[in-house]
Image (cartoon, rainbow, N blue to C red; front, side, top):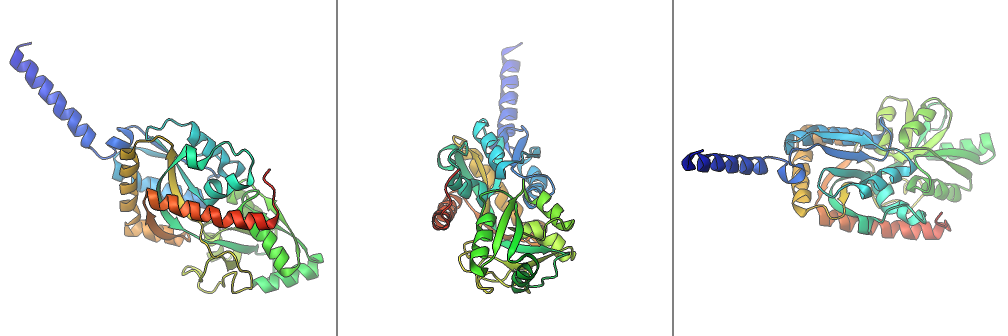
Length: 327
């Protein structure tokens, strides 16, 4: 090849490489598929949120984005998979407070240490947990539910929770103490099977996130009787807070965020964070997430890390007071 032609070929190749690196998603995945791990079954609130975001992120990043469900142990299996993943920016974990902040407090060996094994990427929302009953339960308020339990079951009742040793389980224990009821938490492998049993009137009540319950509440198939947080939710204006119902201590809001394996390049984290900020700013995405019961709020990596530490500190005290021993 003549020298001039060789220089031209090398110049063109260099230009093509530069263009590829400048393309959307280059730092994050270099055009490889981005995988978002979900620690709960398909059909649940977290899964719906993940798929809503993945659909838009693929356009913003210019790379395929898939959702991979790894349900089990309250998100523990997905968290372990994240720890084992290569820190190359192609694997992320979408999680709420339970797997990141609470599981390490209640398990002697969860198989991961969020502070050492994970890198916060970005947060995008907060939400509240809620107490709901099945359509076969006559109660329209939390007070009516407690009266019904005392009349029907001599003060004994079973309440579903999406995972063992979760914030919903501790909420059930607090409710039992507050109203002098013998309430037994029934752990499920995620919200979807719990809600399935509630819809079939196999279980009278459950505690989960508002995103888990909202569609069935709106459809009249379940009834949300009380929510956590400091104020009523805009999406559920007629539903009182737990504090209004006489149960304090659940004002600190859980969060949703993305996490990467420790060691993931900062460029990849920053690129995904910027893309996520743009996606949740889209009116149609914000509307969908709001309809799922989320309060949309962007948090960069540092803000998410600060939020996680504060939440873990709050729940460490609640768990300590409950007398629960890590298992």
